[in-house]
Image (spheres, helix red, strand yellow):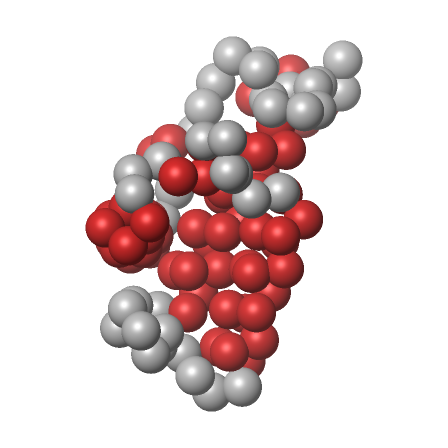
Length: 102
């Protein structure tokens, strides 16, 4: 077992997470639920992880080009990118077994 695996074995470091930033991501999820339906990324018409990664990069590109606020939602483009990244990770984790993620 690696030193990293030993240090995180059985632990989730939620206390280290940036809560104000996560609040913004939660607002993006609420916006998406109002627009598309709650949990639409879990259903039979769920996007692929690859699509979500592409969407995350589009939001990152917007941010890097000076469009830090999403025009449609009024929320930070970075929060949209993180939300899409989380959805991609969730979808991917349904297909792949990660050594330390369970």
